[in-house]
Amino acid sequence: MQLDNPLHLAAHPQPLDSVTLYSSPLIIPVTGPVVLNGAIAVSGSRVVHVGTRQWVLDALKHDMAANGRIVEHYWDGIITPGLINAHTHLQYTNMAEVGRGTYDRFRAWELGFNEVYEKLQETRPWKESSYQGARMMVEAGTTAAADIVTDPEAVGALASQGMHGIAYWEVMGWHNDDWKTEGIAELISNLGHMHHEGLPSIGISPHAPYTLETEPFVDLPDIARQLDMRLHIHLSETPIEAGEHESTLTTYSAADWRDGQWDSYKQLKAAGKGASAIQFVDQLGSLGPDVHIAHGVWADAEDRRILRQRGVGVALCPRSNRITVTGKDAPIRQYLEEGNLLAIGTDSLSSSPSLDVLDDAAMVYDLAREQGYTRDDLTHRIIRMITIGGAEEMGLHVGAGRIGQINAGATADLAFFDIPVGTDSPQAIERTLEDFVRHGAGTNRATIISGDIVYNDGAFDLR
Image (cartoon, rainbow, N blue to C red; front, top):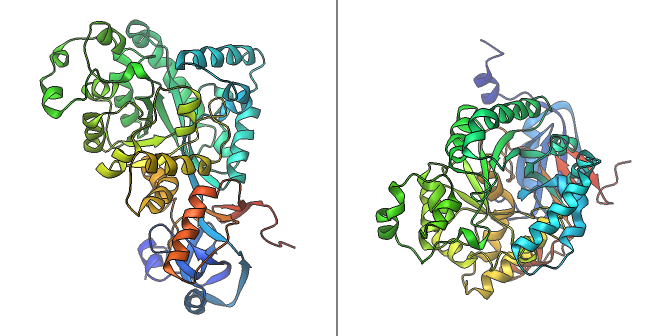
């Protein structure tokens, strides 16, 4: 018998020498129903079991070595998977003064951002700023993020806290002519630098259709796919990216602009064509299931259909949209009713009051109701957005390293929220889950990443 055969080891796991048990009156596994009076058994970096406390203890009797040890920590609140922030720029943590400003249009925010950014470029404090932002996320219960990196000093933010997720190198400002001669070489050089930083994963972020001309948008998906990387785009954030009319499949398919050779999206718009930014980048082949977009504010029915058909998720950033004056809120009700893949991001402190994704989750809840979403699954849909939804948008929801869920074999990323738990009726449980979504910001008291307690605000006595 070949003992080092991984298939054999999977079928006949070795006895466990030590297990840590995290028990709670309410656990949200996400990939299964909520568990009352539950427990999560963790060994090393993985979840071994999740279920009712008694069931887990009974299961461990068959898993433990003769002298195996179980250490239990009880938490009188909610345990969830580590939360996932699907869009942020951690390097701008020290630019909170921009996020505290008041602006009358998106361009005004952009000018305010540029002024502070250029001033900070003199000292380039991006490493310290990004590490500080990552720590803020961990303390809020976030264990993974889609982090866009603009300056090389900030590439190690996620790794600095042992977080999961993807660091996306941002590509912006290139024209068609200098992209071929200089841009591609610079991109490959920067990706090589990121590869040596010990990051959990790296990707590419073509910034937006209004900051990149056509050639980069054609080439970047090809480059990313050859390198087995994912893509993340700011798309449909600003009013300039809206289509001229509420479009349909027929008008998009027959649109006169589709057969033209356009140097850029700006050129297309200047010619009076009514294409949305989503339709434009779709025509370039820039969308696909390895892409997720940030914002998705100016997305009409046809745009939303394109995103669904291409398998492209949307990271909603409602607080940022208000501060940067994107002109309206994202069509959350339509996204929900039509079945688009959704996650939630905070964006950066340069456009948002905090890096706690639950602050945005609460706003998504309120906006959905204000926009007329009446179904009773809203709380559950939002919990999915801030956990496995974010993982799915980054391709991290399946496989041995899967995150955003609590199940046997998954990565042991957990968050512990100080939310009073009602379990005496189905209605009480639903109220508890709604309280978590609407009022959970600032209540995380401990965070576990890959089985290690990386933050503990009095949740556990570790003496």
